[in-house]
Length: 362
Image 1 (cartoon, rainbow, N blue to C red):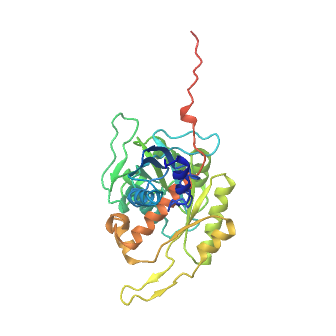
Image 2: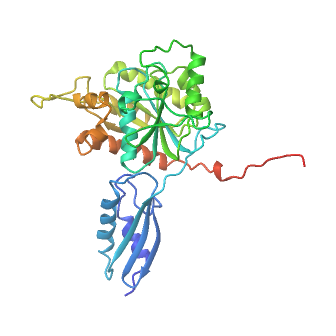
Image 3: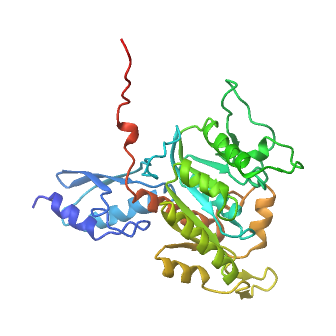
């Protein structure tokens, strides 16, 4: 009896993509199903970076389709395609940047920059082309965390080339000033500096630009909301009430300016003693989970309070590259995949596909 496409689709509907939680048919990831006698070939197109997941997904599809009576060889071609997604109305896109992810916190000292750099490296580890923009003009930390020294070049005297560290592009005011120099600037100068760093950097085909914001809800955040095409924001908090109160303000600010919240990351959620292994909730427990329920926003992941995360970031080799096979790196990569999935589920941006109309006198 001949195998039908309906049989293949029915089998694929019983499989769940481990990253989206949807089956491959409903999620529109299964394409080009071809049946040749007993052999089946198909494409599985993922809209998010998942290099570490490609082989498990391929094996999962092969095993399932081979349960159909009469099926011989199964050849699933698992590929990844990252596209631009919708941003705020009236804000023009940055050339060569597909999606911008803002990493924010209401409060300082919650480990936002560490989460930002590891999230960026997690996306890169999963196969995406990634950039990091350090938007903390007063306290830039990405040059240290990425282990990048030196000054950026300008090839044409107008635009500056991004610096590179661990395979990701980076730009920060920290590359342009002396490390000891304090930025004694008023708000308008700071926002102008942010716009210049963003628009005058020669980004090279970036799938995700991770913007490490300063804490709070001030000038930089407002500029970002009004003039920067942001795909979505991630809120970083620690579990204690005082940090959560400020994180809620940050979340509400993004809601007010119509920037979608991709989710919450709870940092320093559990401390494990490096000597005896005893675990305790130093900053309280379940704060991020409560906040996610209160606002209907996903808790993307929870990270432990671990001395190695701090040591690795300070040394210029953050956890995802310093200990790629460790438990913490896997948490960061899982958060990165989840952020990318949330973006992939958003409406696509087709503005680049429309022709430009130029009116001129002839």
